[in-house]
Amino acid sequence: MKNIKRCLWLLPALLSCLWLLADSLVPAVPGFFALRAVFVQYTGVLAMGVMSAAMVLAARPVWLEPHLGGLDKMYRLHKWLGIAGLVLAITHWLWAQGAKWMVGWGWLVRPARGPRSDAGLGPVELLFRHQRGLAESVGEWAFYAAVALIALALAKRFPYRAFVKVHHLLSAVYLALVFHAVVLMKFSHWGQPIGLVMALLMAGGAAAALTALFGRIGARRKTQGRIASLTYHPELRVLESAIALEKGWGGHAAGQFAFFTSDRREGAHPYTIASAWQSDGRLVLITKALGDHTSRLRERLKVGDPVTVEGPYGCFTFLDRRPRQIWVGAGIGITPFVARLKALAQTPGPQEINLFHTTADCEQAAIARLEADARAAHVRLHLRVDKKDGRLDAQRIRAAVPGWASASVWFCGPAAFGQALRRDFIAAGLAADDFHQELFEMR
Image 1 (cartoon, rainbow, N blue to C red):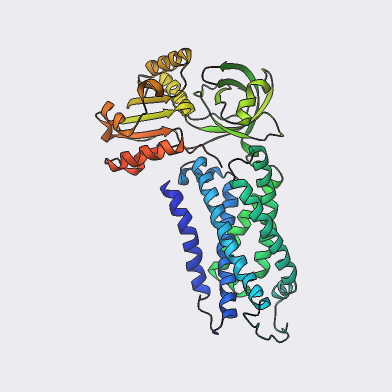
Image 2: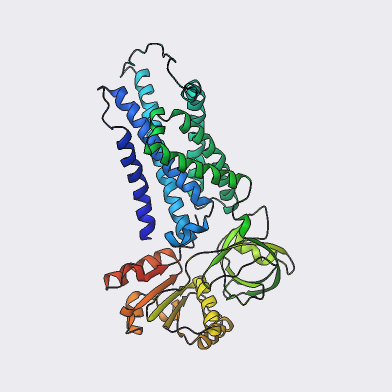
């Protein structure tokens, strides 16, 4: 989370510093319209910079995962960069349109302009000048489309299938905004560091947008497979699916997730892998009926159905040098820990591990399997059923694990619960870097 916050603030700060090397926020000629021209350029640069970074993250670049803590964290940064880009784009639009409104209302008088001379302009600058009118119109309509599409994407009640299509359309809108920015950015800035950085950002964003439009995101990490078995646990409302993969899957670490596609119209959905890799070409998923899509899986999936698996992704892989680990799996958040238990049963680790599983739903057969997996992995299991044992909190965890101060904490479950545990543990003295949380909310 710390790296997400740093990137969210560092990118606009870097762009602002580079802007100030090339220009000034105080116009050489005093007056509102001169100030407007400066801030239209400045806000436009910031908006396109953060939008470009958000577009690059949408393409799921694996090389960034170690630096940002995994794809789940990258998607969280993608979301906040998108929001920041929207706010900056609205600010840019208000600077551009506000003056026109005030002239129309009689509040301002537009300064007189003489004819612009093309003398002394190079061919590229001349081309850009002749495209200004088109770029302004394209940018304005692309802005309206971006506002509408981003607003829909942020609406939690908006169906996931439609959310995926909205993001597809946003790629085309972004390319229109790149044309707008390239033509209308102050031409002298292209020879400055700000121009080089913006060129790199927009080139990366354009490449990511084209990758999305042609359906090539994650193409090299996709493996075909078929559903080998399906087991439904009615008391938990959980479906356990075993997938038999074809050649091409390079394996995964316990705690990682992948995107699974069983219906092209629905698109890919991310699920944590619930099995350790044994080089046998099989994966296990555990999905709980929490929404429209997961609620329909039991009726729609059949043994033998083809599926596409893309991945693996994520850095929630239990790798640290602390002598102890505390795992907290809330509800369906137990999934990555099940995979790690099975991996430890094959290859024991040196750490002392306490696993806390808190759940509102309880099925004896599933609990028995979890207890057996914990025994095989030499992990101490603490089971808490909410109705019987009450809510789990950091104080109860510390009381059950006297050596907690020398442990790292690994949490998977509802975001608010994880944030509460994180605050409490850090306040009690745990280092922030020793609290690991999977952010499985991908939107």
